[in-house]
Amino acid sequence: MKVIRNSEEDSNLDRLGTIMRGEYKVPGGKLVAVEIEATDGVITQAHVAGDFFLEPEEALGRINASLMGLTVDARVSQIAQAVEKALDPNDSLIGFSPRDIGFALRRAVGASTRWDDHVFELIKDGARSPVMHMALDQVYAEAMSCGTRGPTLRIWEWGAPAVVIGSFQSLKNEVDPEGAARHGITVVRRVSGGGAMFIEPGNTITYSLVVPGSLVDGMSFEESYEYLDSWVILALKQLGIEARYVPINDITSPAGKIAGAAQKRLKDGTVLHHVTMAYDIDATKMLEVLRIGREKMSDKGTKSAQKRVDPLRSQTQMTREQIVESFVESFASQYTLKLSQVSPDEEEAATTLVETKFGTQQWLNLVP
Image (cartoon, rainbow, N blue to C red; front, side, top):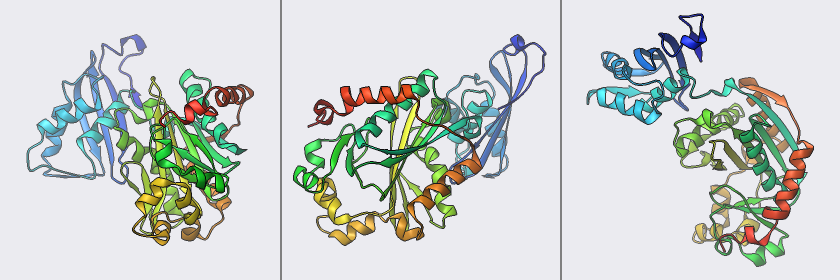
């Protein structure tokens, strides 16, 4: 956010006119910039610009006029509604939408933040039990919420094979207990929704992002999934993979699905966003453990399952470690990243959560 002050006294900012600018890069689209002037909390001047396409050119004047009179605390939905109401039926917005104008305006007034407004802490975590990883995700989200940790990117290493089910999934409907026992699979339940994930150490790339709610301010869940996955989609493209986001929570390529994401939001808006990618996969074993996978593929056979989830190994010919390192380098090239590690207090808190929640049968059988 850039603020040009018309007064030397900060206390006068609410009363006197100020010029504020915000920008929003649409995932897969164009850049939208909004510059406004406000007096007494009301927008008095507005100018929208960017590398988008807009026809006819007179539509820009209608968009600018629609923002004037709004209060600086207007929500994205209110801003978008005002813009939509002002547009003529034949106006064409290409590469952006009224909601994208809302995101840019919210950044202009400081209600929303951008990726590069934050310093992200990188944790390359060693191999841990699946249940400990579930606990650490909650610990990091709560640490972000209470201010003891900043935005964090944590890349996991799995200490054992596992099936991770969503917080609302039925255990008996998702997992074949005999298949899981035969293959030594640990079954754990995470705090976020979504579907079951089949995990094998060395064959999976998993990471968590913990970010403040301001980073996805005004976004629907679907919009936030696409936005928070945008950095890794770029990283995949840099590896030569034509990756793209598929609603609601998948990353795919022409060769098949690459990854699935899930989210949990805390009361203060803090977002836990984690993604599991298939580096390699034993589709036969997966279908012996996951009931849902068996049902989806029942009329297609194992070969179709291999096509549906196409591992990164076959698409890149790179080692898992090389791919992980390229992800880190891509993130660091775009945003500020500093090395961090699990603190003793976080380790202790996670251990307690394993004992009282994630490692208990009560939690695992939350939805029988």
